[in-house]
Length: 325
Image 1: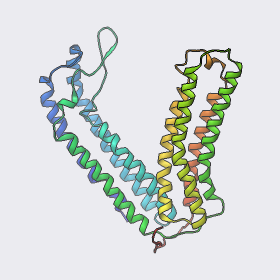
Image 2 (image 1 turned 60 degrees about the vertical axis):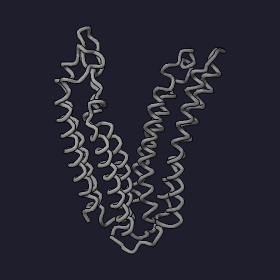
Image 3 (image 1 turned 90 degrees about the vertical axis):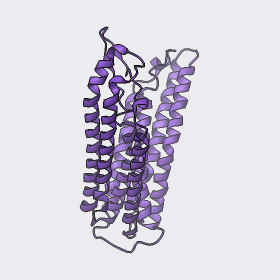
Image 4 (image 1 turned 180 degrees about the vertical axis):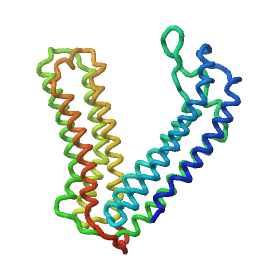
């Protein structure tokens, strides 16, 4: 107990300290740094750097604290529910490790890319090359710390998987993991039907922009099929072999990947015909956006609801997991 809970804290502290010293170094050199563009907003950029850096460091530190609290909630709250513990561990660990590259990119030094107002009423970009101002040790050290945080989490996950047993599964709950594929098929079908309706009603013309938009959306859907198929496969495995810890862990991981791909699909769906100039989009049925967005929203909610339904099995802690679970 407690391994999952405290792991993010020391790494978060190190990330904050590394960022603090890097910001202090850049602060001393920023006034004499060469201006690349937009010299008129250089004083504003210098003055705004420290408040920006303080806020960014506080945000990153808060993320590690939030990770600690969430892992604590999963470990101590689900300690008597082995299935829930493993599922929650897989879900949170995947989200936590996926956040490491984000923390790296959103650092307060090279991530300082504010837009500054100019007298004409517009906005100017950062006048300094923050990458060149970054201390040579900073990004390698930050990357090393974040990699170590991810590795430490993997070791914690390994311990969680080993200490839980195989549990029986109800006859229907594993089939919930087949639904991600069904939702993606329904989403693709709705787009294809709306496309056919538009082509049947639009006057003859060149619709290459619409063709490109549809092809791109189908390619993104094909990408999202990978985690959806992984969930379906593990649903079948769980149904046949019971709640094996390793399979449950992978379900949690695949759920995070699936939700992220759904987000990408949703963003593409909203912008699918935004730049289409041929007039094709005017002939799309009015229900396309509402129906496709609703399908994606339902897909995310149903997948999130499937996890607690799987996790409700096994109310008492069990030991002696089968090897290769």
